[in-house]
Length: 269
Image 1 (cartoon, rainbow, N blue to C red):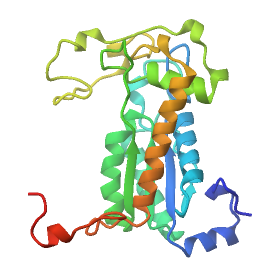
Image 2: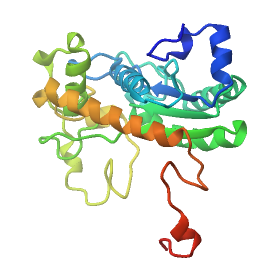
Image 3: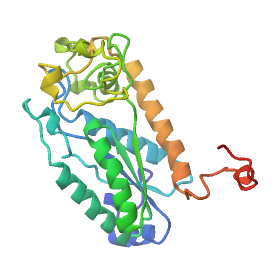
């Protein structure tokens, strides 16, 4: 029986066939299994992605969205120098996503949203969106929430820092050990005007270029109330996006789009 969680893998073959006769949206969490310092579990990105995706699917009233099994082993070899990193190559992940697109299409899905909570996947999944659009005809979308640096992270809290630790204190406090949480802020980047994680010039990096523990940020001020707020912000954004995704056509925009001014020549130039 189809339940409120709308987990596609829980359906029977008969129920899946019914879903495929509609216009369903597949929602695929994407995380990683990789080091997050001494205080967080290897599955941090996967846990956050699955929780955000699951809550958004359950809350997206009126949208025919379905939670799919997550991508867990992904592109995370930048952390390979630390124990616990499990990764596949970029070529393998791209091939997996390409082939998954064919299966989604064959099962009646016309739209897919990746909810990604591991930064190492983002660029590759952006490429995959166009690959899937061309090869499978799917409407393709990616949510990759931006890092939210904490007050002591100099804008560079991107991994196992204030935000991720706060979210895990909210979602799975049993897996967090704050007694061993330590800051590792890459202060050497702070003096660069152009090069940085979010600056105009990106740079190739490995985790051990920036940290001796795998932490890139400052988790010491994390708290569960902040985590609850950050998770809710992610969920609210995905819920709003699903309402647009369900009807999106780039020639027409999303729900409520008014192109009359553009059609009349009065649009933005």
